[in-house]
Image (cartoon, rainbow, N blue to C red; front, top):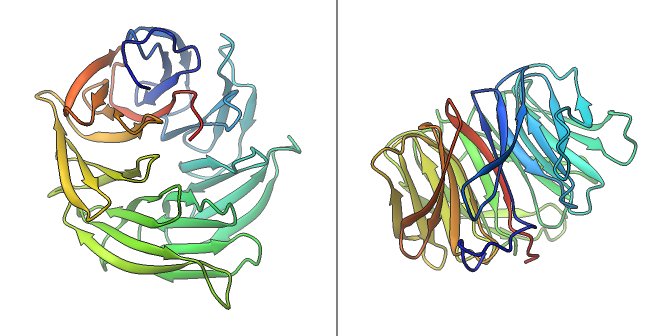
Length: 318
């Protein structure tokens, strides 16, 4: 996304959702909402675009809905029902063969998307509600974070798993692994962000997480941590109404993104060139930021309540 003013962005997908029970699709270059989908059943906890860019998955209370991105159809094309409690994480294997989810039912699940029979293929049970999950770039390990403060590494092939607890009496709110599988980050409800160096397993194929540093990123509740596609930056968001951008070379603070009316920042996503960041906030607004200038380049207004989730793809493979 070299220039946010470039109108030739047919491949750009920006969707936002939250507590007003709507999903909005935006023209990224104008800030105009071109499609609104009603999501009546519940708030939306997270959004994810399928690898082929055809479907948008919206996870809520006891369900996952998948919407056709390239049509104006209001109804979801696929429904995943019968999940107990909130679904808090959703993502996809790189070829779109399967989907992973995490939820407050204390499980992470693998769903086979090729069958379309809506059946869960594998279940990983933990002892606390799951807040987040991310897939290792090797596509064979799912990292799961839960409310007890435990990080689980689940080997999807062998079923073997390992755990670590970076900070007692805290909750893991979000996890991220960079695309080169060099670093993993986890942010907790105390605003601390833990960084590990990721090392391939030797005798045991499961990856090893080697502690690197602890960043006191925010003084209030941490919410998200996301590595940039070029692996040089880490964004953290929190209840302190800021986004902080850290340089992964030494995990020093590069800049802080703050706006006078911005409130809790629930979600964020980098552009494919790592120059821009889109954020979602409790003030009903999504924002496109220039990371280098630490300035808002565009605002996306229209939601009536807090925006808690966004999905962004600018059509460039990295």
